[in-house]
Length: 75
Image 1 (cartoon, rainbow, N blue to C red):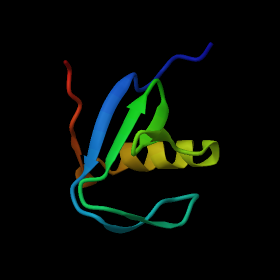
Image 2: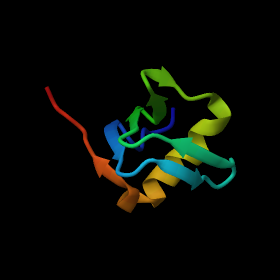
Image 3: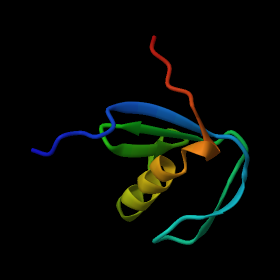
Image 4: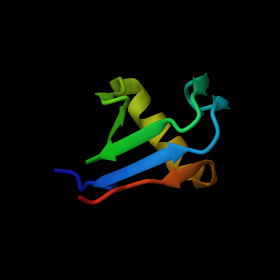
């Protein structure tokens, strides 16, 4: 079994708009959009992102940390 790279992180987009996501297309996100990654599975709006979009979106988030605020909360 593969090791999990991101166990639990929440990233919040600083500014909404249209972004070019490599291997996908231009995508539009709202201001403050949350990206929740649990056990290397990306969720948006409480739902998992389709399988083919998982890798490119996670890589885009990890490679563009200046666009995001890490908003992980521990309760």
